Length: 240
Image 1 (tube, rainbow, N blue to C red):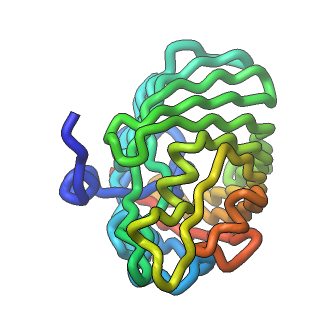
Image 2 (cartoon, one colour):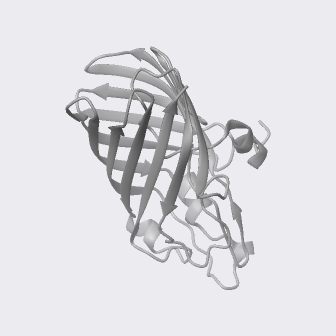
């Protein structure tokens, strides 16, 4: 399969942090702002897929299908026990000194939900890092009246060595400012809190915060400046 470039992401109108929208809407649009903390060593490019912090949002969801830019899920089994097929954006963009540009990737996989426990597996279908990853999460939705929803989540993110070496490694031909560095598998911790506030029948705002704590294998990389980093996003959504 030919490796996909940034035109692929442009054609899909990338937005990977927004996963809460107005209930029962079929087509939703809006605008959002995403702000990841700078945790890389001298990153020369914006880490977000389009290189933009302000991003347009186009979403669609029906009884079983949900589409948020390139983040797509199809529900095969609903209820306390669920099963979804998914396509989602992973990784980030990075480039510094002699280190060649690393691009975000597209994973295809499946998610199983058992009450509060969710297990997601994804494999690189864009042939960007040529590997796979898995996440095990504890997540629950709390509703406060008809307007406010809050969703806390804790996840263990399991990355295979193809993923870690592509995004956090330094190859022999990239040495200069950085020493060569090769990683093995890694496990990150993710703490997240998503909230959605319904403003009226057609619009809502969604505020999300996440903190990712790196495995020591990743933290020791010369391309990494922090032990962990936070990301927050704010979206205004409008039902068409």
